[in-house]
Figure 1 (cartoon, one colour):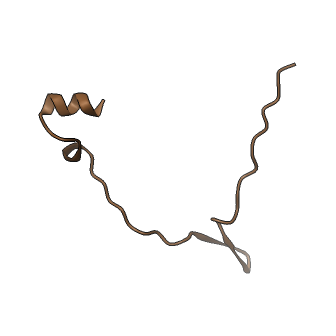
Figure 2 (cartoon, rainbow, N blue to C red):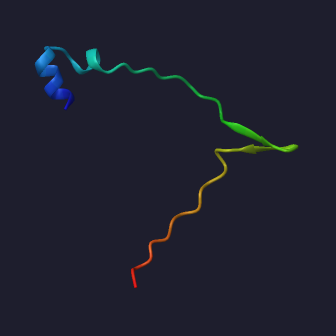
Length: 52
């Protein structure tokens, strides 16, 4: 789709899409007195069961 827009407006993808990159600090959340590092917490994987 961006290629079609570039053809219509006669521009480059850089003209259509603004990008910005910066380093982000690790996110932390307080839980009472303890600090939880969210990058260390992983969600539990979903299990797909057959119907029946």
